Length: 173
Image 1 (cartoon, rainbow, N blue to C red):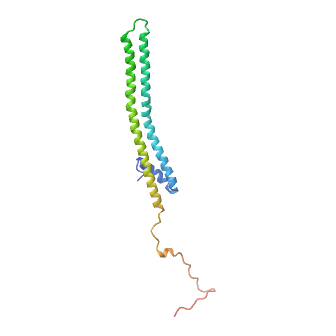
Image 2 (image 1 turned 120 degrees about the vertical axis):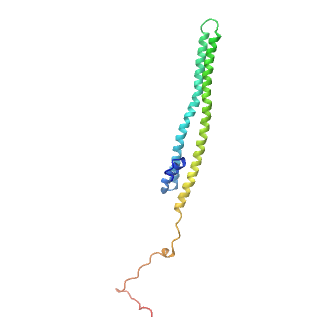
């Protein structure tokens, strides 16, 4: 059943059960390796949200620098400052900064939102898989039904054939 199940637990159990014949520790190691592999794949996908969340403020910073350059260029004309051109530069700086923050805040939230379940599901799956592998291992080592007394007496030597130096006693009367 585990081999046909593509769930997190099914994949971990399949890896562990395939090594159970070599001992419980080997099965646990195989299950843990599969668990680490699956968790790593999920975390790699979630790490993209962390990258986007980190880049959002950097985009905002670039926008701030661009807007400030634009504002200072309006002051560099040499004449009296033009408030309209100055406000265009400040508006550009604030708009791009706002965009960077607006992208970053929800993405950072979702990164944490998805990271915590990945950790919890991984831990729960590891515990369940370890318990099931331990039970399977110990159940496979339990003795079967008690053998019958005739089977435990062991083989008996066959009687020697008559003749050839053996003395046979007369049959009882």
